[in-house]
Length: 458
Image (cartoon, rainbow, N blue to C red; front, side):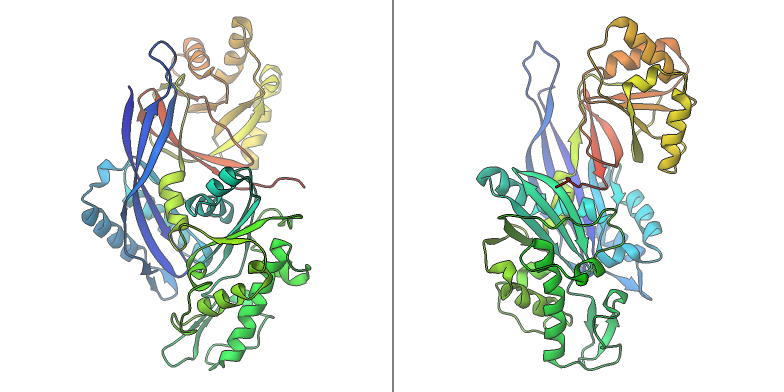
């Protein structure tokens, strides 16, 4: 196999807006004809962009049926069938992810989106996707700049610190343009709970432009603190999202600030402060006048579409070519990855150690990531395969960075012929992760690695 085309869908159900893109990914074999195939995703091209609509809500809950109808209409407009979709991501972001029915909506969307589309939410993954979709990682890689990318949506601001093109830490603040919503008469129709204690404004009030401007400036102050361009106060920690599993480490030293999200369109463009019936324009204006833009900054090559393009174009990777699968149905979704040092495989309490790891992620099964594998001779391969095959896991799913997937899978199958096995290699993980596995692409498998926490210790 020399090349193959995959179609990937990205759907972003945000606090304010919902949108969808379809991308074409070109898979290429970069090895010669006399070596093991090395499949990589080369060209990534967005071939369809949906209209940006307001996220459909019903009684303050996400209207899942309306979103599915929206998706069906976009497939028709793009001239594609669901069966043609190979991979992608559905991202429920910001305050929408906290709605009572968000989990059920995610489940329904995953089934409706296509044959292999992963449903996921979480500020850390959103931060990475937005940074990639906005071109911030490419900019850092090409220029050597240290970049703090901030994706500012309706409910949250997702942050990614990038060094040499790599995201080294992520964070999320409850800062967004839709935390306060006004009706057509200028009265407050909705006030986010995260604003309690920050403003005396309440639902039913008719705020003045000055009152709204002061609130937008206060929210902007938290972003200045997060970037290190303003001294930190208790406000920064007060606005950190509960979903962030580690506190945001304020970066030190020189950096360029990069922006995307709907609010990014309001930073340099002059707009009516009440154009969207929320704080978005005022927040953008406050950012433009703040320390965030007093030093080097950039507006992303994508703004409101950054996250959805990141989901559609940059969420998919490929496994190595030396993989093994027996009696395991695909696709597989949201598999917790538990890290197991390979030496543990040779110890008597191995099964108990695996069980404890799975309990930590509240799961009966998961993908065992074998860490620090050495070059294995036949005796060691047999010993590791014997221990792994004896685990009471159905199916047995293993992954590793080194090219041992096929050899290890075959050996386990010889020792335990009735056990369903999936053994993947060529995969890199960082932090606590979940894995989705799609259909074969030549000798490889399409995968989505969702890292929940990315944090570099300063």
